[in-house]
Image (cartoon, rainbow, N blue to C red; front, side, top):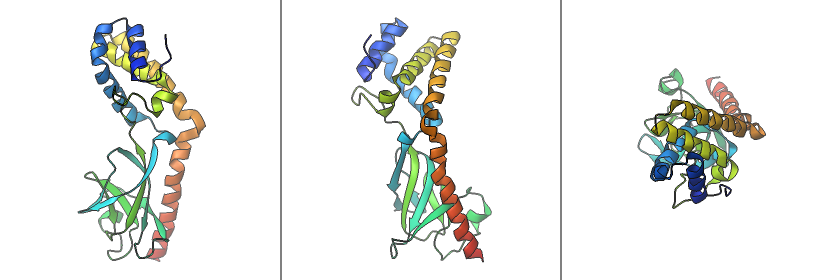
Length: 216
């Protein structure tokens, strides 16, 4: 069996393992469902990105491939060299609802109604570090970083979905467990979870210091 390096070789491996070539027409659906699940569970440095956000009414538009924030930084256009790290708060928190300086620089941010919103709402240059979705694997886009690094996760994922499709609970559980084991191994490489949280902790600490000075 050929190594899994792209969509076509994944399809060939899928047919070999399953011994059901008639299910190949459903492979794009199985891949889509697997990727949706992975986007909810997987967090690695390959998924981290940074983008300047575009202002819109009430806030800033999130990137199309956004999953989860890591950190947010704001700079006044009049002093772009002075970058401030914002602290995340819940939308219904006192900080976001009223405990901020209406005419001052933003101190807090939240994600609400598909936007990133700041308090205060003073306009500025906002940069978001975030986790992005896995680039969809299709016959037109036949490879991505995850298939390169961990082809077994894709293979086990689509096999699990194929057995779910066939109502075979035992085989579905077998391949689901195999996928989750390899997923845990991938997330453990390079201590990526701690690395991913470090910018967020630094941003929160910096924002706390700014907020404390403002209150004082």
